[in-house]
Length: 141
Image (tube, rainbow, N blue to C red; front, side, top):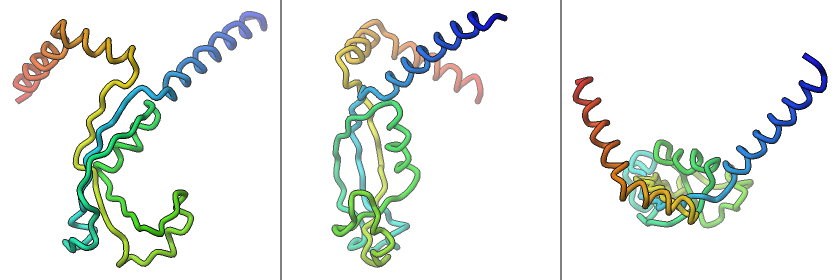
C-alpha cells in the first residue's frame, strides 16, 4: 500500500467519523420525562421525595443514555445544589429529595425525523415490527 492510498483512506475515514459525530450531536429528539419520588432512597418518607412531574428535554443521540440512566438509578436534588454539583458533598443526606424516572418517551424533534416517523406509521412499518416481535416472542416461549 502506498502512502498516498493510505492518506486517501484516512481522509475518507476522518470525513465519515466527522459526519457520524455531527449526526450524534444534533438535537434530534424530544423526550417526555416522567419522574416521581424514590421510595427506597427516601426510606418511604414523602418529605424526602421529589414531587411527581412531567417535563420535556430536547436531546441528541449522544445525550439519550444520560437521560435513560435515571430510569435505573435514583437521583437527588436540593434547592442549594449548584448546577455543576460542585457543592454536592456539603448537602446533608437527610435534606436530599430523591427521585427516579418512571418513563421516558422519545419522539422525533427534527422535521426530517418527524416526516420519516409519520411515513413509517402510515405505511404500516411499526405494525409489522410489532407483529414480527410478537411472533418471535411466542416462538421463543
